[in-house]
Amino acid sequence: MNYSKALPSQVRRLISEGTLPLPTYGWCRSHLQANISIVPSKVADDFERFCKLNPSACPLLYRSKPGEVTAPILAKGSDIRTQLGKYWHIKDGKLYNELNDLSSFDWKDMVTFYLGCSFGMEDALDATGIKLPATNKNVSMYISNIPCNKSGPFLTNMVVSMRSVPTELLQALFTTTYTLDCSHGAPVHIGDPRDIGIGDIQKVDFGEPTAVAENEVPVFFACGVTGNKAIKSASLPQCFSHAPGHMFICDVTTAAFQDSHPSPYKQHTPCVVHISQNLKRFSVLSESTKDKITRLETLALFDIGKRGVEYLSVKEDLLKSLLCLYQASLVGIIFGFPVFGDDPVAEETDGMPGAIAIAKALCALGKEVSFIIDERNEVLLRKIIKKCLELKILKRDVPILVYDRQTNREGAAMQFLYEDYREYGSTANPRFDHIVSIERTGPSQDGTYRNMKAKKLIEKLIAPIEDLFLQVIRSQLESRN
View: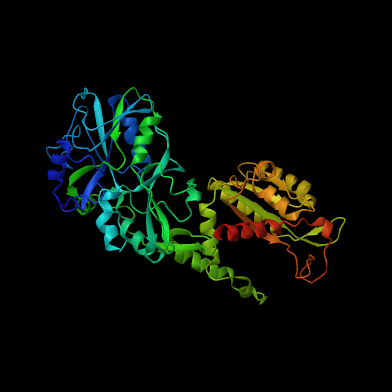
């Protein structure tokens, strides 16, 4: 039988007869497939709320009544106890057993949740030219570092599935999938898997590894196995789920279900942006938001004083910088430009207030922010931060990190950038995932620091904080080689 073209009712019957204990990827093309989470009725409301708080990972298609074994709006006459190839039996938060039939269990108090699956968007992916794994081969799945929103006893990180996509098809992929909410919708991450806590994509948590060709990029979708992890996290006496890759196949098609449940994002048009030339790092925003940022960049480059501002900007760098900051969690902000004098030093006036304004905005977005400064500015900055807290300009304190001049500049930069480098030589625990510089002096061609009139500045007042940027660039180039 060609399972990709088979009727869902036929496949469910064969599964219930025990003849198809295989992953359902590629089966009954164009039809919805569902992840399954089954919990006692006393926590069902909490689990429903978990799904609604985390809709990309757990798109709720149907919630059964206690004891109900069918899902009338998805598959008439179905029986959830027998129509999955494999089930997980979970007890006290641990996988107790894998089963292929749940008929022997008392069902009257159990509530079944049917959650959308990316297997339901295979036709859409195929239409964009994205290769699909061979039938009966499971997709790659990983436990990410993306936290889900908690509900009652349910708390876990998001599980993601991965597909390898040619770079030139990324835009088509997003345009095709962003309104398919019933099948997880658009990807949650594109590019470097380390950004979401995946050290090696060949070491899967569930499923099978996927090869990524040179011209391709790993693309990660939210995955319904998040539901499995969530019910394990609750440490319930007894609950059940599908085994990863073994889905419930619905009679209703993805297109029909989505038409009856229109996406709230339909009015937007996604735009994929390649934000790093050195790394395979991408981000996404709406076309309308991109237009606003482009207009803002044009206004910022309006050269009122005819100072040649346009030569200091690269087109679309504002857009890429904003997207980098949006993706970041740990941000370091560098400033400090001693214009002239040594006692007291006359500082450039835009840097410090600009740094505080950036910190205020990033803190409001939930980022962890630190100031990176020369020793000469520490006392003044602490006084200003204290006043900002009193006036509620800043809602919380911002740590101050003083960068010192050292003989071994490369080693000093590495120790500053990575928490465990000094003791273990490890780069696995970076202190920042993005660094911003505002009104900061840098070395001229001869290595000296100068003001805008080319007058030499007092070197002992200035720490070589630019080494942080240079070291990051070196590390990126080394990782590519």
